[in-house]
Image 1 (cartoon, rainbow, N blue to C red):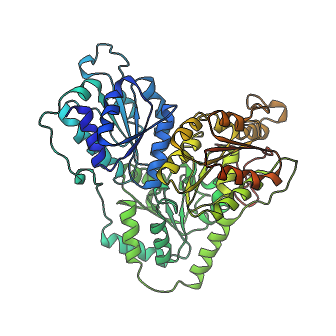
Image 2: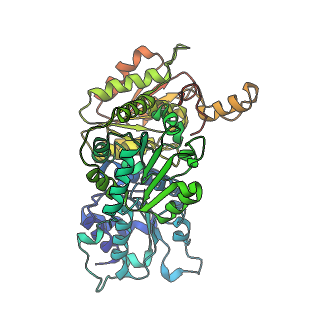
Image 3: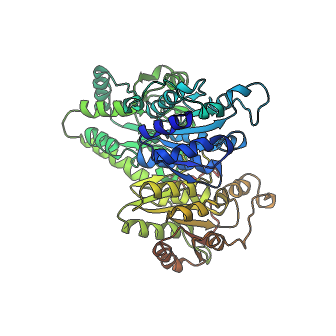
Length: 544
């Protein structure tokens, strides 16, 4: 067996049966090896799309998502979604072809110190030095991606190792890919549980890895055990996430904040006043010592830090909560938090074109009838309406990193991972342009999702910033074509297209798109309005 065969065999042992890739010189040996290993290759139109798809695959399945890129520009194209995957806490394995070891320092074709580039973006970056190390290094990458705070890893594969004989390489088993686990000590679990139960207004915060979509069992069990509010955060807008309504008002009043795998960072206003009361106590449980140190630097003596995996901590706390009914004050506080999160701004029609809220209402009618609905929301102003007003048990958004444009890629991977699901993705006309050609990939793969493009002929997030900060006479550089027909462009890729200009036509257009059995693009001309209000009496800033 050569090195490429060893890589394919190791991927199969790790449970991988599908990878996302764009072909290139340095990875052709792996393509060939995937035939024997019976690993499917989803061949995309841009390398970044492959990484986005691997991210969505990981979020939907809970396992490793694999992107295979060629060297040089191909590798570099995948860096932006790698950053997104890190902040979304998605276990993505990026495998890249690389210049041969024998050419190091000689100016070989597309020679680049790839691991030096990815090291700040991933949990682990490796470049094997011998053919015998290939499979073992891949197993180490997978194990690292799935351990602790999940996240992306990178394995750069020198071309000469892929064609070299494995010789007496160490044999691997499935156990070599299992994640490590750092438990919460029983004494610490009992102490935290006691502090939660003694508090009057506690809040339990979870990070992206443990949202209701990705870990519904954990969050529900934690809420049931303590009868306390459990809130997961995964938006780049942090406390201004419109999906959290007026939650920031509650955070400012809580007396105990427990962060379970939720980093203290910009999304929490760095836990400073007035975002958090100066008298509030803080407990941070996190697998990463660096983030515990950051919490201590930001908060000081008010914070208790404990190193443990979030999942292990949630399970231990759930067990330590004990039995008993919640106090009336506790029950009232939990209801207040739920009411604040449910808050949404009222909207009114201001033109003949549909308001974004009307589009979201139509999408909700589709999702509510589906047996297995999956909701994908991109970023931007229309994306914020979608995140605030649409709901489904399984949801993927653009993530804490704030990247835009990955929505189509997420939808395609979600449909492949759960073929019977009804997958709906919402994006603006700006974000749609990033990876529109993946409609071709979707058609080739038979991935029948419905993409709704909220089309207001501009980059509306930045347009709103200009209106707010510079005035209506200082608008520049944010306009898009009012004549672009995204529906017809999708039809050119053998997909289904719909063009909607009136709210009354939304339901019928969505029904036809679903019934087509093909990837579908519903191009909806919408009112150009700012993202929804996120706290009562305050308007959201224009940001991705």
